[in-house]
Image (cartoon, rainbow, N blue to C red; front, side):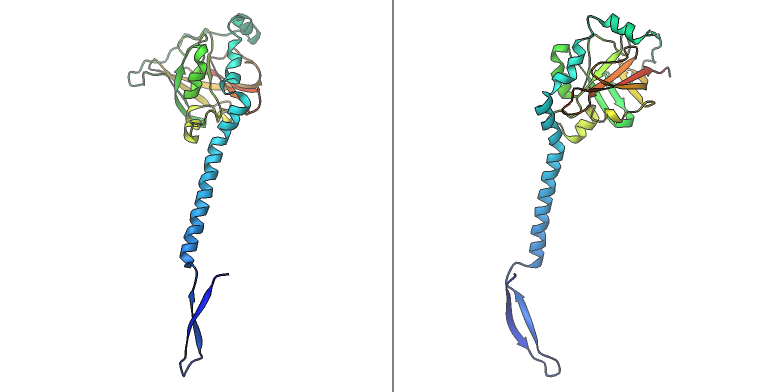
Length: 237
């Protein structure tokens, strides 16, 4: 209990006597400020935990890029068989107009989920370096310009300790599960803007449809080898 000291009693002949008190502890405002500072510190710690826990857990349970990239090591030798199993792929000659105002580096934008990032180009052996920076275009498949094979883009969902929440949402596939059929995807490639529309999706261990012009893919959960796939067709606009 706070220490209270009686100072004096003031007497007015026309009024009742009343005591005047002085607080012997810290002032009330000092306590309020100290308590507020403590709560703010706790809130800051909670924010940091929420921000970085997915990255820590992901690294512990999945070994980072190994699960994301493992599926991409398979289709090379038997790609023809996979294409046949998926169905006929129609090659469209359409190319969007060249625009010198567009960036020279390849970029990916998915407006519905807030992705807006540079595409990472790297050989298969260096996939982990690319995934640390964001979204990786898988080599040995197609490009937006050359569509004999689908363009495949892969990225982590939760990523690394160095990633902030803002970086994760803009430069990875953290929100890919929220992308819906009918959503558009934009890729700037060699100063041409390619616009795609998602027409299908699947979950599992393998790509289900190699006839797509564009395949987006990531892991579903922190401790699962199930992947999320989104399949898109190029729009002629």
